[in-house]
Amino acid sequence: MRKILIALTAFASLAISSASAQSTPVQGALVTNPWQRVLSLRPGTRIYVKVRTGQKLTSTTCSFKSADADSLTCARKQDVSFARADIASVQQAHRGRSALIGAGAGFGIGFLSGFAAATSGSNDSFFGKNAFRGAIATIFGAIGTLIGTPIGYFSDWSRSVIYTAP
Image (cartoon, rainbow, N blue to C red; front, side, top):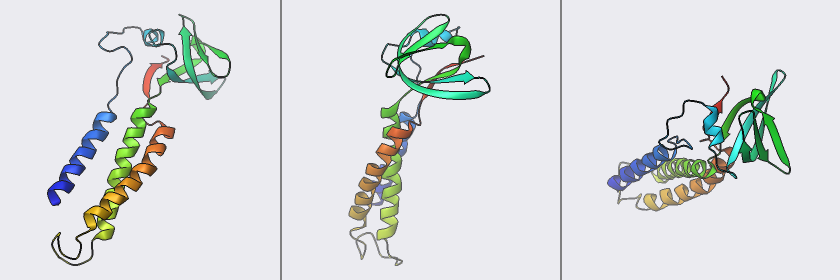
């Protein structure tokens, strides 16, 4: 049972670390102009645009439509255009990856909590009084996964930075 717990913990940490690895939209390409990454986005890509309006930064979530040397256009309910000079940053959404991170974290926390809750204060072996702690830990892990997945999806922890203004 101890080997299974170690294997599950190792698998969860590997899944979380590989899911959180950052990727760029232009795989393998050498980009010298940061705006070039915005120009290479595919239409329909979900992005977050931070725009400077005076001293304030406002954030907009939209679907990328097009970009040229001086502006970016994306769609919300209507098309919205931003001047390049006003854009502070552009980030690409990765909700699926964030949901996986949330699921892995939720499972790990739930599993460990269930294992601790099902363990009595005695020094019995794994197959003594605490014979069902593996099953209880798995149930808690599943509950943690159900809680962690939507938290990860809606918070979108793993956005990739596409452009940052100089």
